[in-house]
Length: 140
Image 1 (tube, rainbow, N blue to C red):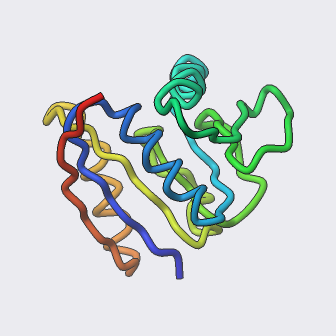
Image 2 (cartoon, rainbow, N blue to C red):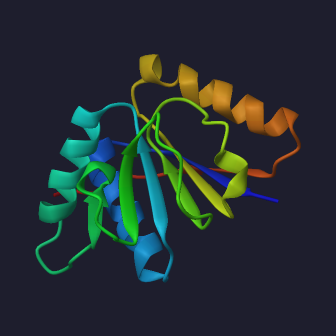
């Protein structure tokens, strides 16, 4: 059964997503990242190039049609593998259960958390084990 983790982010959501993606990638996983729009996908793409001076995170936008272990997609894209799904889209795509792991990133702003609450309830009602992590602030 798919393992699901929620991460309550303090501070910059994109920076946290970059750190999470980097950590998952360094453990040898392929990652499907779902964003709510092409603009958000492009912002994440840019941030992945610049967030750390001493690391390289091989990634691509789905539109680039490159074979990279990290694919940044919009909410209408379906995944090409079943390893790890990082969800930044604010919705729960129907294909989530094909993945071994799902990482849901929850924004700090209370007004932006309703989608995460719905997703949490969605997973729990269907019997998925859900873990919740409160993340601290990091400078940079």
